Length: 258
Ligand code: NAD
Ligand code: ZN
Image (cartoon, rainbow, N blue to C red; front, top):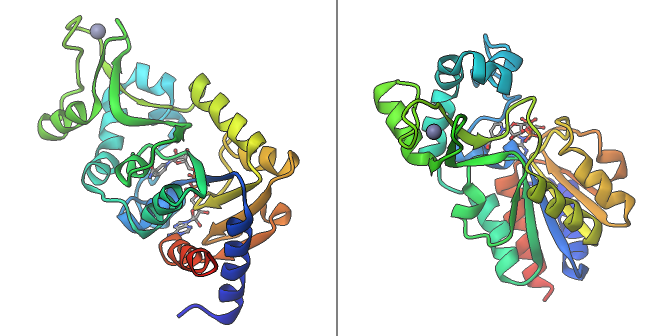
């Protein structure tokens, strides 16, 4: 049961969304926790336990010890390969289909927005759809590469040159964000009149600057997150709750008022 304060905030968010001309969503790992993929800050998820992220999840670490990277990413990729979009992903896809939402900017690499049917997605931190040889830059099917690794535990090698190591097309610490995705996301942030931020701690730079860019260029901000974020003080509506509960409720109110 949602309390009256949350219901009121949901109604406010629905009114802002209903009146928007250019709505953009910005999502983080929290939108996918109800699909069974832990965010990096979840207690007991094990994803960051006992590891130094700069060692295993950085480009330097990957080049130095790819086996350590692959061993670390194994549980996360197992979950990602079997995960399904949840009610929050579907709610955003419904908003796009209904003509309200123009694009989704995501920090997630789990591809659940595309599986939910979105057409315009900016994947700021890459995705697992492809993997690239760090020697000859040949591009392979990323899901096949990960499935092969999950079955044999061997660091994947390039089928083209035979020797290079394959790296999933995800952005590791120390790597630049993909230029076209970042530029598309920044343009969307400048052009939108409402941005709804879902499931992000807004503590990972430079992606955390996107909602602030939207705010600075005049957009209203709606934030749906379990915990407070540093951008709450700029937001027009802040709703603390689970995305998979809150977003479908917002859509219900948007539809009711049409
Ligand atoms: P984060 O882990 O820093 O923050 C997630 C936020 O979501 C937290 O503030 C948490 O309170 C909130 N949250 C958790 N479950 C929620 C729910 N059900 N509903 C609403 N809010 C919820 O995640 P981030 O901001 O995306 O940044 C972490 C980095 O981790 C990103 O770079 C991202 O690429 C990567 N990452 C991605 C995935 C994925 O693809 N699913 C998973 C883990 C980490
Ligand atoms: Zn190669």
